[in-house]
Length: 330
Image 1 (cartoon, rainbow, N blue to C red):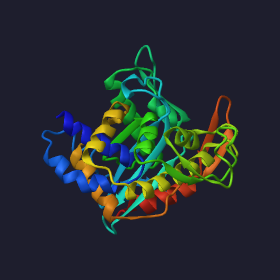
Image 2 (cartoon, rainbow, N blue to C red):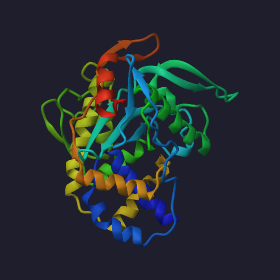
Image 3 (tube, helix red, strand yellow):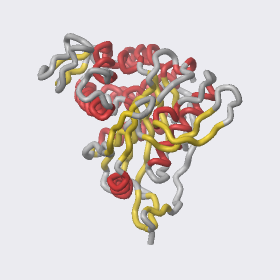
Image 4 (cartoon, rainbow, N blue to C red):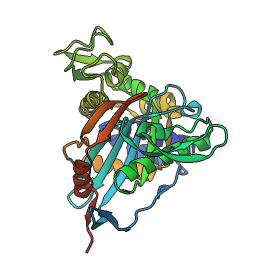
């Protein structure tokens, strides 16, 4: 059971980086054959439905060839179980379509203003409010049950934003795992588009830089004093990093012992409701499906009363949702 959990969560880390590590695929069968038991719920907390939704008065139904997964990066450090006042700093939708063997990556701006559930830290009662979608991952408590609820809250907020799309499973992790996994693949090389020397002297505009784990966190996390200081420019850097990580990870050979050692370093930072069957399915699709162009829903960033606010372009969002997730109802 313990070894099974190791393999599942290690695999999760690589998926969080939107990458399929060739070494994992090479070793997966012999790793899995040595492991007994299961973890999580293979069907996920939410199931596919054929509910009709209405967009601008027109009826649509979910594409039955599409499966969606939610990936959440938490803006805290340390084990996920202690991550009480957490925010979803990185929100990513992975959508696999078996009709044409393709997958789409849709990052959601963490500043997106939308309706979320907010829990009172003392009474535990929830109320709806319009706030940054990042705050959907904060219920003010520190229990393992709370971590599951946080993921479900974020999944609901993203689902509601995207006109009721369904998520098969969710995965969340704190930022420590990113640093660890970058070091395990020997660093990631990226092009620095904007001056980031105020963050680290090595991040010079116009230079290609090899990021170690520590520098990678600065590159993908910095916001103040970088470019226009909005989350939009930070998202562009995050996706550039993950694309570079993908290429690096595919070229790295890591044996079973190193994989399990890597897990020992990152397991406590991850929360998921998926099991090994789900991750095996996802890995196979990463290796055989074609990646479509990343879609970042456009909108306008504003300075709010307390923090940055991002207002998604609703017309553009409708087009994205209809194209990726839905089909017209007959």
